[in-house]
Amino acid sequence: MRSKSFTKKIKEANMNILNIYYSSTGNTKRVADIIAETADKERHPVETIRIKPGMAPDFDLLDYDLVFAGSGVYEWLPGKPVLSLFSKLAKHYRKLGNIEQPARRRRTKQAVVYCTYGGTHTGSNEAVPTVKYMGQLFDHLGFEIAGEWYVVGEFHGAYLDFSKKGKLGNITGRPNDSDLQSVAEMVKGTLQIKTA
Ligand SMILES: Cc1cc2nc3c(=O)[nH]c(=O)nc-3n(C[C@H](O)[C@H](O)[C@H](O)COP(=O)(O)O)c2cc1C
Image (cartoon, rainbow, N blue to C red; front, side, top):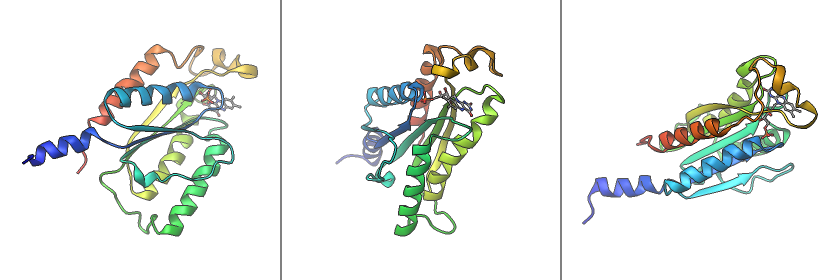
């Protein structure tokens, strides 16, 4: 007969992961790709969803043990498609009674919320509302917030110059290999967190 610790190890090895993100100019996609690749290498099943405008909440966050949720920062907040989707999700879970007063704790559910941001005016301060906003959906649902990550992401297109003269200095080319390597290490670290 299998020992309890063996069964627990198998369970941990099969953590169900959702990797959901919004990316308008590709930076957050690069981070999400590294998350998927790293979790996959560590042999956890990962489902990746790229948030699109007008998307319906046709998936269940509660099906997953660990959710990575990311967005670029646009005027201090996540992209509009994220705002719209998260609002629909909150409404849906409220209706089902999954958002309780006070919010229940689900000790085996974890979420990492992250953004990529340019920080050209006030540095990471202008990215904080994005990460806190996204975290609240998971907090309301009872997930433990296992991480809040801020990854620097260069500006593209018409805003190219913002990458060179802002509060964070020259951020051209970010997220770079070193940023992505740090993300991979943080993913590995998160996958080691024991839940009861
Ligand atoms: C229209 C626009 C608005 C932005 N607003 C902010 C902002 O308020 N604060 C910030 O830190 N970065 C801002 N950025 C920079 C983006 O957050 C950063 O480039 C991010 O990595 C973009 O993610 P994405 O490529 O996944 O869309 C802005 C970029 C654009 C194009």
